[in-house]
Image (cartoon, rainbow, N blue to C red; front, side):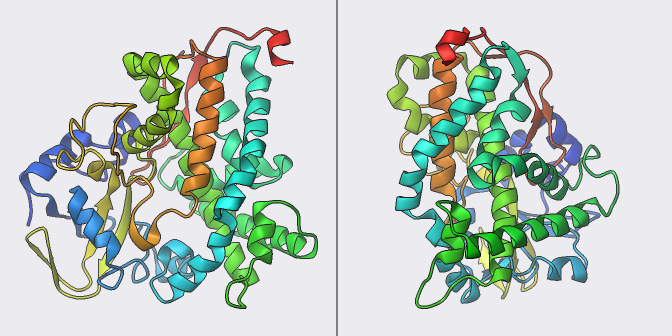
Length: 404
């Protein structure tokens, strides 16, 4: 069905200024939670805005395919899609099941527990570099640094960040100076992953890349091609989502000072605060599925081949799923948000992301308790990633002896 709600849910300029269109999402959830929309670039699609519909679709890979047209909603031509169709997010069973088992080796509980000291050391080093200055760009100096340093050697982090920005920010003119930029960045990142895989295969270390290359399930190991595709996804998705969650989470605390005071008074609330940041920010706004058969969703008849766009940012503010959903509440429990997805495509790196976010805010709130925004917050022009490009901050400088 079409709807009387007058809103372009994919308006890049709205996302660049305001972030996700939560007012329009709210009206759609109330009036037309499954609604048909036309778009000049990608054609028609069904907008899925309600929590329970998005949840059900995510559990049914047989009916709602990630592979048929890909999970990322772009007007890909055939050559562009073929280049990425074997990435984990674009696979359906049985290929998805086998591939996921192999790459999950790098995200075992043992691996995450082993990483905590490493993550804290990296976080301390990052904050040491800015603590004496009293000001910095939070994104560039802090939130972008942590996830990259965890995944790649420190000397490689800035070029990986550049490739990631160029690949993910399809519609931001700051990064897309030429139509070939994303393709060149993808090729360079693929070559980087290939070199890293070859090195870790020959010279394994105590790191994620080595675990992925050396791991084995039922006698199977990741092929070089599979590793490259997954590591590209990890470098882009793992960096972008965690970076933007840390940035958006800090902004949420600053914009809700009563919740920030509450958290500083009771640090035991940090685990629930992290989950509320994930719900509130929802760093990945949407993914796409394609119907493999005629089916009914939310009272609407979906035809085989129809595209469905799952708006996680809307589902995470659904009043039927979250009491007082429009309130940022660091003590919210339960909090079954969908920021990491649900079902077979649930984010493999969720526990690593949670670890990085928790450690960062433990250290940040302890060492920079009066941190505040000191200028304009610049958002990414993207309806896919709820991103922040720049966020100037200031705080009381930390004496040198306190950092020793």
